[in-house]
Every structure is written in structure tokens, then in C-alpha cells.
Length: 267
Image 1 (cartoon, rainbow, N blue to C red):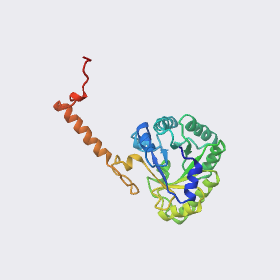
Image 2: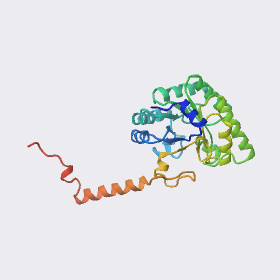
Image 3: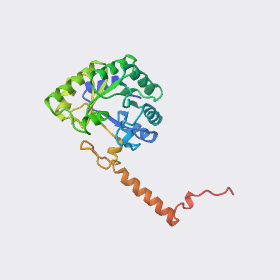
Image 4: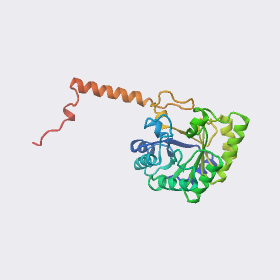
């Protein structure tokens, strides 16, 4: 049975960790749905992990809908959060329309947007007013890569620390049901998680958030130089190359297809 925003709140209240992972297609959605993972993020990280872009900025709403729909077909009963891509929520009216498309066409259960500035708070409030659950995202926000000058840890100075706490509280008060904390010092992740009523999900935010999220391709070994916060749980790229080489070798030496892989006329 699909978990709900109420279930995630109960998990935080009871001290049970929440497990999120990204997925972008039918096969991976199906795999995640059969695992112990609690919810799926259709991240705009699809731009880098699947589509080969240098940043997430090239991803648009149509692409997010496409990947969300595909993942939903593989995970029909899993709670799905879909990212709102760059420039899809910087105006409250536009934000409402794009969020509705991700829910209605993309078959997501909730949307996620980056930032905690006043304009982002207005977008969250507008979307929540449409009865669409919103997950916030602060800290290292990938759509801000050019402003940050790269993918750098945020919240290290006293002023930045204070500002991220302010943003977290504002996002909660705007009606978000969950908040992703990315690329921040561990103790700041702990402080925010303790101050908020809503669950926090960390990615490079230390051990004390209410849950964790990783990009599937990172944890499965498809990323050449994963970030420090990533743990690689399987080397699937290496295994895939080995399997492809074995297939190529058998085709070339004639051992594939074998008799058992061949059809025969009915006698």
C-alpha cells in the first residue's frame, strides 16, 4: 500500500528513518518498488545521471513528466516525489500549472522545488493551496550551481548557518510536508532536523536527519567519481561491461546462440 505524507510524519514522530532513492524509468522503478525503500524521487538529476547533461539546468517539465510516468508504471504503489526543474516555479501561477502537470500527467504524489527565498516560499504556498504536497530543498541546491561557483558545501559560515535555519522554518510554515537538506555540515543538519516538525531527508547532510536519499546511479556504481557522501553498494557498471564483453565474445566465436536459444519447426 502506498505510503502517504501522514505516514512520513508518523515515521519522524516515532524516530523511524525514512529511505528515499532516485529512479527515472520503468525498470528501476520496478526494482525500487520491490525493495524496502520508502519513497522515490524523480530527480532532475536525471539530466546528469541518464541524459548526459553537464548540469541539471537543461531538464524541462516535459522530460520530468516523461520519466515520472515511466517510473510510475514500474512502481504503481510507491510514493513518488517529482522535481520541478529549473525556471518552472519562479512565478506562483506558473508554478501551480507545472506542479499540476507533474501530478496529473506525471502521476507523481508530490513535487519538490529548490530554495527558501521569499519567491520560493510564495511558490510553495501557491502549490500547497492547490492541495499538492510539496517537498522543499535547501543547502546545496544543484540548480544554483553557477551562483555557488560549483557543487560546494553550504552553510559553513555563521551567517549562512543562520540563513538556512531561517529558510527551513519558512518552508515548513509555507506548508511543505518534507525538506531535503543537501551538502551542509552535519551539525547544521542535526539542528534543522530537531527544530522542524516535518521530516528532513539528508544527502550529504550527516547522520542526524530523519532520512536519507541517494542517486541510484551513484549507489549502484555507475558514477566515475561519486561525491564524498555517496556509498557505493554495488559495482553494476563493472558487471554490465563484463556481461557485454562475454556476450560479444560468444557471438564472435559462434557459441551464442546455442541450440537452446534457437527455435525449430513443429514436427
